[in-house]
Structures are given as structure tokens and as C-alpha cells.
Image 1 (tube, rainbow, N blue to C red):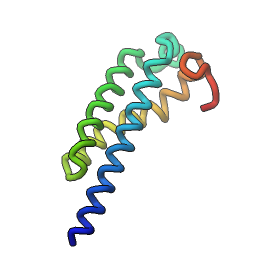
Image 2 (cartoon, rainbow, N blue to C red; image 1 turned 90 degrees about the horizontal axis):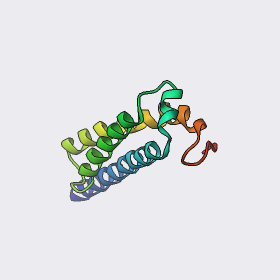
Image 3 (cartoon, helix red, strand yellow; image 1 turned 120 degrees about the vertical axis):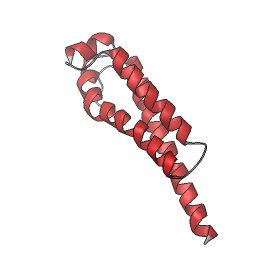
Image 4 (cartoon, one colour; image 1 turned 90 degrees about the vertical axis):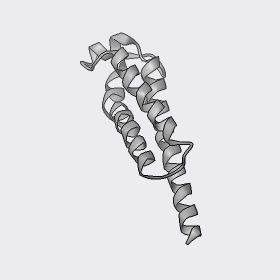
Length: 106
């Protein structure tokens, strides 16, 4: 039975690291985009998205060290969802305006 608990602990740790990487990616991407791109794409301001992705990064970072449990899963979700929203909705809209990778496909 301890083997199953060990496997579950490692799976939670992997999920926490993945959520942290996703949130960090969103924060860095939001930081390198020009502020005008957000307004031109009819999205909220750059400051708003920096605050949202920054908080998401903090929450997912707090989930990493403990490695498992219900509270950690909640932190991963609280951080991963806004980061996912930024990457799925806002990033495609603002990346064509330059900054960061200069409007490249990826």
C-alpha cells in the first residue's frame, strides 16, 4: 500500500510542477507583450494580466513543495485556470502585435 501512496505523491508533484511551468510561461509571455497590444486586441490591460498571471504563478509555486493532498490540488487549479485562460484566449490575440517572439507562430 505504501507504493501506491508514493506513486500518487510523485504524480501530484509532477502535476504541481506542470501547473507552475504553465503559470510561469503565461507570466513571462504577458510581461514581454507591449501594453498597446492588449488594448488593440480588445483585452484587459497589461497590468491586469500581469497581476492575474503573477498571482497564478505564486499559487502554483506554493503547491509545488508539499507534493500532494487536497489543498495542493486546489492551489494548482486556482493558479492553472487563469494561466490557461491567458494562454488560450489572450496570448493568441496579442501575439500578432509584436513583442516577445515578434508575432511568430509559436
